[in-house]
Length: 635
Image (cartoon, rainbow, N blue to C red; front, side, top):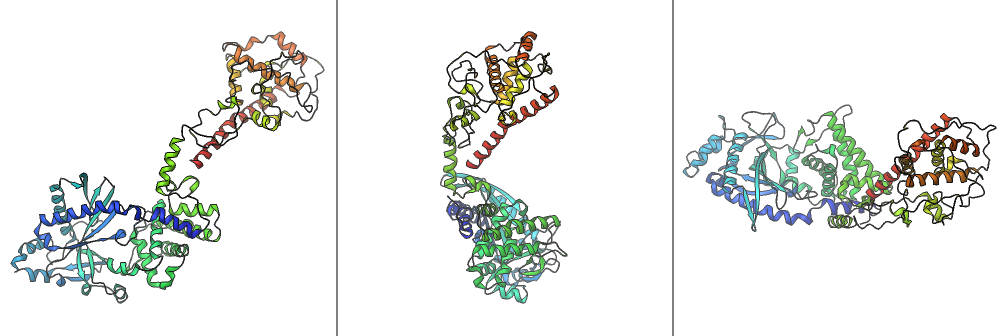
């Protein structure tokens, strides 16, 4: 699936492929519905007191707001509890904790004290209030936890859906009683108890009352306080229904929330940005902006929202704030450290607003990649960063596995000798295969420098091309493979020394005990990794009879090739145990008399040989790295 050259179209594709959950919704909800119905009905049957308090349930959270992204694997089910004479609960704002309320049960208990049908309930209520009849969060939650445990034990911690048994794992997490399911789908359900309260019991300021609108109910959530040991009388006020109405029917507003949540999930240093924080940011913008604003293009809205988020996270002079929508005295970012603020600020500005702004002005490949990396992980994208849906990704993986053993290379055709060079790399589909220098020369019409890869008739070497001394032979091979260093295109004839003396160049003294055959093999493999052997197993052919270009020196070039051929002939014909001293002193004297001696000193020759050998040794590693990078991009 190719990437469109348009920012809004790219965002729409990301939304359809990796944010919208409609494709998998039915699979998860079918199993969730069975779990919800079973647990809700069973817990009612197990306890008659709770049965009187239960007043239905409602799916809230991201799923209830239709703001869930990627996978519908989390459900927030609010269990509504209402006491007899519930409207007589005295609700007050908690002066010590903005956004929280306290519930005074005094009038409720007075009214039900003498009611026979509520006698058991009254006795239970006495256990979960303090001396001032304030409803205790910790005592209420402890009672409910016991009921959940008893119910699950009665079910053997199992759920049977169409003959498939799923194991249920129960855990307390914050205000929720969470059930984890690992098969056939991996998901969790938060059963969140709440005290349902009416609109006339609301404790909001004038502006917030206006935002609350005509909503009938709100909830007090028994949320534990961090670090508090002992009794807790404070409950978090929740206005889900009112928030749902404020965010509904506003064009791209919900898309903006989904994209920012996906951005949070993609960036590791945004992990502290909770979903409700993002929702709160958009709640403030929903009342500050005209309704028509949310019908603008999504990329424009996202740029504005990322900038607003950055304002709330800034640390200059004084920290930015994200105020609780229903009680502005509460700063929801107050507990962030300076490091957390800076990390999220830099991410929101640098990877959020900046990338979108750059892409909106210039939609080149680099800007497209930056935008995609902000809203979908690397493993969610196909080869070369292209967008692929989940079914396409599976097909691509299957196709790659199939082609792993039968890869058709896109490189130029290779010679018979080179096929052994690329053997073992067939598991890298479409990796670039780099032809040898001999093959390039063959394709362009020039003579290759490695005569053993060219089919030539066997001829005897002419006696006019004597070999070089053993020490100089290795230098010649290195220079032969690097024509730029050999300097053979000048046509200058090497100077011949005035006097002939014992040659100064001696066999390498660093490893006298190493066999000559093995030494030559090592050097040959360094320069030509896979062409050391011919396919036919025949002895390499001598290049002395191959016609050289006129521009080459008449004496130096044939000698170089002749020495190289003799060295390769030795490594195949001579046994590995052949000592270095096989070349006698008389032979060295004869060879030195017939060849011009180099003008450099022995130390200069050794330094040049070492640098050239390192350069050639590193070349195959570079080619292999390029091949690996190419295969990663194309995989």
